[in-house]
Length: 71
Image (cartoon, rainbow, N blue to C red):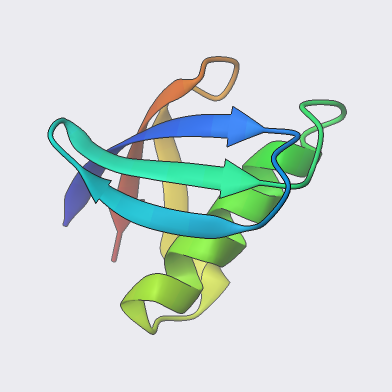
């Protein structure tokens, strides 16, 4: 399954919300050294009740808009 997400790093809390264009992921992690991407993988995995190893960022690793693939 592929989903579109918009990421907001440096937020006050870690959360995921359904949005018109897909999902909005808020993370406390900063966008440095891939920390925000790892947090996004963890948050999406928790939301869909899968292992973080099954969540992959297919496109947009350096962008706020990402395509996430869940296997």
